[in-house]
Amino acid sequence: MSPSAWLQETVFWFFGGVLVIAALRVITVKHPVHAALFLVLCFFNTAVLWILSGAEFLGLVLILIYVGAVLVLLLFVVMMLDVEVAKLREGFVRYAPLGAVVALLLVFELAYVFWAHALGFHALTRLPRVSATHDNARALGTMLYRRDLYPFELAGMILLVGLIAAILLTLRRRPGIRSQDPARQVRVRASDRVRLVSLPSGRRHSP
Amino acid sequence: MNLWITGLLSWFLPRLVGIVLVTVVVILSVAYLTYAERKIIGYMQLRLGPNRVGKWGLLQPFADVFKLLLKEIVVPERSSVLLFVLAPVLAIVPALAAWAVIPFAPQVVLANLNAGLIYILALTSIGVYGVIMAGWASNSKYALLGAMRSAAQIISYEIAMGFALIGVVMAARTLNLETIVRNQAGGIGHWYLIPLLPLFVVYFMSGVAETNRAPFDVAEGESELVAGFHVEYSGTTFAVFFLAEYANMILISALAATLFLGGWASPLAGTGIPLLADSGLAWLALKIAVMLFLFLWLRATFPRYRYDQIMRLGWKVFIPVTLVWLGVESLMIVGQVGPWFQGGRP
Image (cartoon, each protein chain N blue to C red):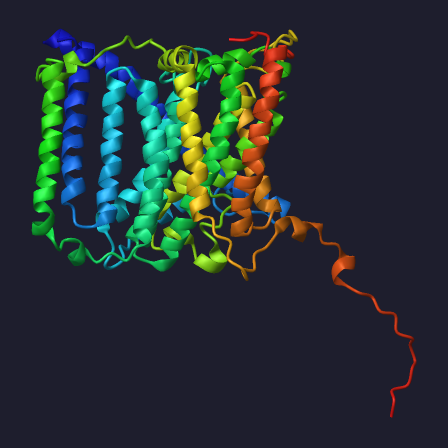
């Protein structure tokens, strides 16, 4: 095996191994904040595997969007919660059958995918590979904006509608709230606030 | 087998030397950036700044470093120790790793990635985890509040920053930093600064906000949060946070220089003046230094923003400005304006 191939193999097994361990820890660790951080680790390792198989643009975007934005917001919420760990762990037996069904379904789906594509266990060499100089971003752009322009724009519109709907659902105008209007604050002039009253000087106080 | 090892080493060693070199230079620059900051702000406020350790106080940064390294690291009780120690590491690593794709001179870059700009965005977006983890693991209300403020601020300004960078990508029609610099070569008139001036301003101010520097440093807010997210950190762990903040400043300056000011390309290229018309590392260093001076000047000049006004500036001013200017830029591209958009429609 050539040195660079050996290095790729090593990197794959290392990050793949960390990925599996981190994924297990996401569901076994006690505190939600730790679980969220393990999820960050998962995403990061997944991104490395994607980059390794030549999809550098997608891998970096995965980090940018999921690690850099989505999970930060998730952590933001989780950290503010005062979590009672014991309470979270209640009801394991009650929910176990449902969990088992979901898990079995996932395992079946995964097995089906592997079987359908007749992938071997030696994963790295079977991963779809492109040359290192292949410009991912350009290829994706050509596909999305030339070949699949209308479906892509349609998906964008659906997301936009969803965004507006979510904002409308949370937008409540309650009466009686005092909020600042910076534009008005900036427009204020001295004449709006201060009234100069000229009093004739030297007038005697009334007795 | 022997051949195999030499093959691996010959692949590995030059890269390792490059990485170590860049890291050492960045860390030394951080040391003297703190010195420059204290001197420049000192003179702006009619003080002398450090002048006791070494000639003109030149050894002051090293005195500070040794002081911090020799101090005890205090880990708060009932804190999450592993995360507490990991947080400063997570803050410094992205600030150093992003240098991999910065072109220092023609053909001199550690990794000439096709998606270089996205790599930079991805890495700078994980810097926030250091702050969040520090705030949460410290088990202190001041640290947590500082971390929350910082996280909200960084995420908000990342959007404006990303939009500003889209302008550069549209102009250069590539994500590769080396090509972006090459497109701007040929004198000061070719810089993207000129057609993209509003985006440059938005990018730089967002950079100031992302690095939690004055006037956007509410995450530290000495007056109300003591020191914000790093209030519980001492000694080496504090030094690493400090290092990360300054390394990020240098990184933002280097990116601004690369994306808008032509990187290593000489502003006098094409004039035929010997030496000054040549491109190279010196021009990049000079441009970075000018941007860093702006950082320090801002800090000496402006009082701290109020928190809600920071949010308003990011969401309601910067993002609309970038969106409008992206439209204007599209028109310029269609009209093939100036030397910047001669390539025509892609």
